[in-house]
Length: 250
Image (cartoon, rainbow, N blue to C red):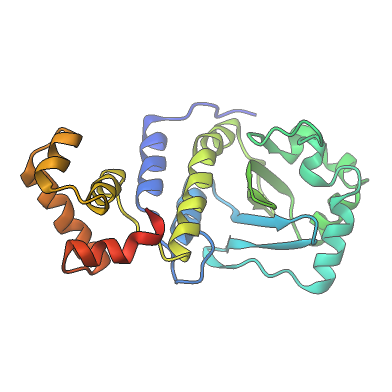
């Protein structure tokens, strides 16, 4: 479908999007800044969706016309969607097969069905009713009972290009990891670096700065700097207070 070359600038921007992930508010189940960054690279409406398939319930975060908000389908839309979801051509356009699921799938709707063919399916008619003309789906490993997907939509214009598919393929695993990070944040876990967590775990075992430095192969000054940064980030005034604040996550 053309434009298959992902540039170094694209890859650099993906890393920036992942590194700078932030939420607009404390209630977001995902990071709105990431959806905006994805829409910058691959224009369209973007949703990060969590689906409880057994309970026929969807939640998530969507970016429509540049504005982020919770995914809140109406009752009529919800009924139509779930009725179509289990029908032929519904879930993942049958690209993810029951019994042997491949959660690394990144697929355009047009890779599976043409426009006229898709309208023969209930999901195709639902999508048309919602004004969706082109769709790109990126699956990821479920989170417990929740199915996780990144979905991109266009109501007009051209279909997603090969280059745009490859961009989503590159960012897909990062989206899954960022969601797990967001879950921990919502549970109250502070966002610390892997090395800062290593230092705190050793502090919790009673190790001194000298012992921690020897264990990690760094100087005592570096250990002190890590602890200073941790104290600032979690609002602690001492080693004891820091361990108390993070004890549930060590």
